[in-house]
Length: 360
Image (cartoon, rainbow, N blue to C red; front, side, top):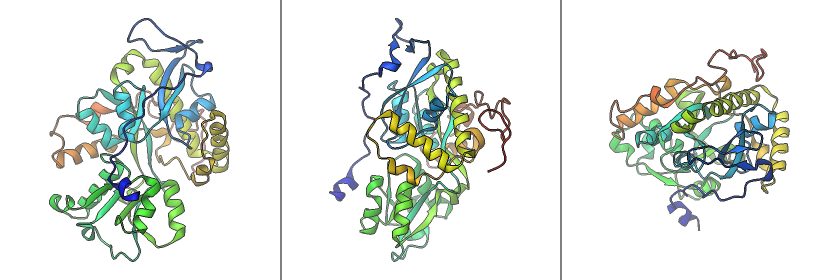
């Protein structure tokens, strides 16, 4: 069974075919380009969620930070690339993925723009690339001819692995000899311990449960490469932004504030709020995942995007011959204009309502 899973390609985005809740009874407009609204005039934003977890935008809605939008859950996403592809093809209004995947999508002609950082690595939340302690793997060169288990191709784990190998001095020909194998996160620890892969990417609950069992050690972590860093962004289609600027602005300001709430609020209070939200939405989810929640993973107040966080992956793709030099720049792909922590509405040290808070 596991060998079959190792050969599987990542699943594509799930089709959105769920019934709209009565509370979001939408008024369908006549024009094909019109955006649905609720009975009280709020713009409806369809999205894909994450089972057992609460996203910052779902938290923002619960905290009352949105004034002109309403969220509508369509399905749970299978991966970052699939999520932003769903946004680009109008299955949903926005999606979140690793910035390298965003660059590749835009380079392929998808008219998307990043508006807010969505995830990253900090001291408490990061991905480790683990080996067995008895495997004799100590350096990047030891990985030539070996297998690295990652959750999906073309996303965070692949880019970070290949960037680390490059930084450690391997040539492009040598890097190509390191085999990247798609393994579902739930199977990564088993595949690593049984020798079916030599390195396994483990983050969140999978890292938190695997490490105490012993026998594994990190060869490197994504935090080792760039320090605390924002790795992913939320993107909207540019046509949606042009047609619904106030809705996008509301999404950004509310989600930025919710992210800040996560950055300054005690963990017990956060977990209690997440438990409340997950229980109310009634999707038969496992609340035990919340035991392993450590932080938002976003080190920058209010999830403001830094140009370097996108440009570095443009440079990476150009260096590897996967993107024509000068075809796109970071400035083409992102904006912070609606983020209250970037446009002067709030100072970086402010909380989600503008109050100054002590550094955490």
